[in-house]
Image 1 (tube, rainbow, N blue to C red):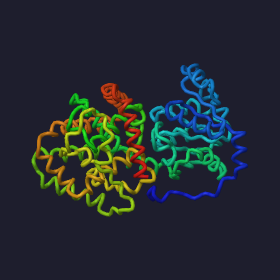
Image 2 (cartoon, rainbow, N blue to C red):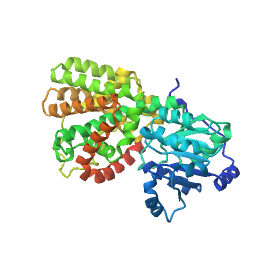
Image 3 (cartoon, rainbow, N blue to C red):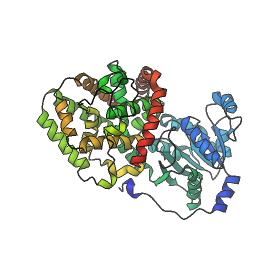
Image 4 (cartoon, rainbow, N blue to C red):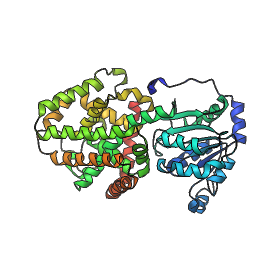
Length: 448
């Protein structure tokens, strides 16, 4: 199957008169006004489209008040949105997509186009095919970033799953034009495989960090050994993830079948590497990691080198403690990322056009660690010390915990584990988001 790096497509220019006519006569409907639903509504309205939306009926009065000075038309429920709209976007949790589409899908306007923005397309497409009328086109989407990241320059996947002609797809492309995103055109199957490759392990690593710090009763920005360039990136991004809603990550991990082996392998890599560390098998550890480096980074070309060094990340710290000099770290979370790619035969550079900001940052930091002369050897030497042994043990337990939750498909336990950790870090999430946003803006200029 072709990788996403080959899936950019050039289309002829839009017929501006046609687009103006569409804006004057067609409605875009959004079912679900969570953070991403609101982002989409705002972007569509600013581009001059007519937009209606709904959320749970219990939220109707609050939304009417919130948008009383806006052109956004708030409706009572998805039946009204579906009957009125020419393009309906379901912006709901992947866990609930079947339930919501079964409820509102039969009310879809004849000849309309329907899509969704869940992070996993297999259950979404299944729900659309099962509950939508046959005269309805299915053209779905996925913005590969969070609601707090500007859409400009970020990947936007468009999936033309079922349509009666090119006119429908041209219309959908025109709807998203003002996002100024990098459009990528894939099938639903390709989308799910690629998002698993680029997001599943990344999320598992940062989620495991948060749970491990909580397990050790640590606020890492208050502890000298967690203060520094790469450590800043770990802390900022982990807390950024825990400042979002749990279902964003649960949907990708649990409903995407391609994500399961990725997350399982990450836990297995963490465990295997940790065992080599505590058993003092440094030669075996070195051989395994250098093989992984050659497999993942051996053919690296300077033209797409990301290399995010400590020095670039030093300024983005939550800590009020002055830096006390660089300390050697086993960096188990990073070592296991590359080892899991190696074990799975994944080339992370194949999917850069479909990568999230967090993936590009994590890949850049990992690349720096593995490709900078002497740094990988420094990590291996650090494993002989005991200063990070307890932290690595807690991280190993956390990685296996997330893997077990995903393997059992347990949304309730996923939510409980996520929200317990979220509550632990709650006092710092707002400040971490602010610093993390600054860090991400700086880094994305380098990695785009």
